[in-house]
Length: 111
Image 1 (cartoon, rainbow, N blue to C red):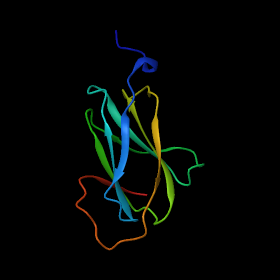
Image 2 (spheres, rainbow, N blue to C red):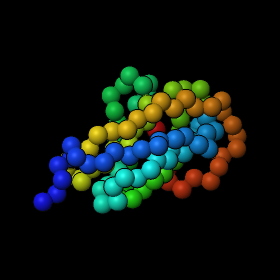
Image 3 (cartoon, rainbow, N blue to C red):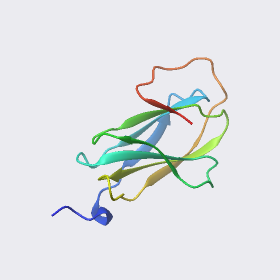
Image 4 (cartoon, rainbow, N blue to C red):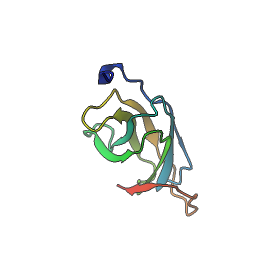
């Protein structure tokens, strides 16, 4: 019998990198290799959550493209089995001033 979602681990160590003002990379430590990963975004931080992508089990990074420079977003990561969702881990991310240099991005979503 599978564990109820209230007993699932939560993603940890959320961090932002490769911030160009128009995009950033979100990374995390994955604690559940058998569950899908959902990335959520709130912009501004008081808006309701929006699931921007569901990633394969074991995923540990996602590139978010199309952000506004010098804007604060609430970004979250949680696990799902396709029906149920676990607890969300969040961080506030303030994007940098816009840069014309874009780092290589593996996966992306326009917001």
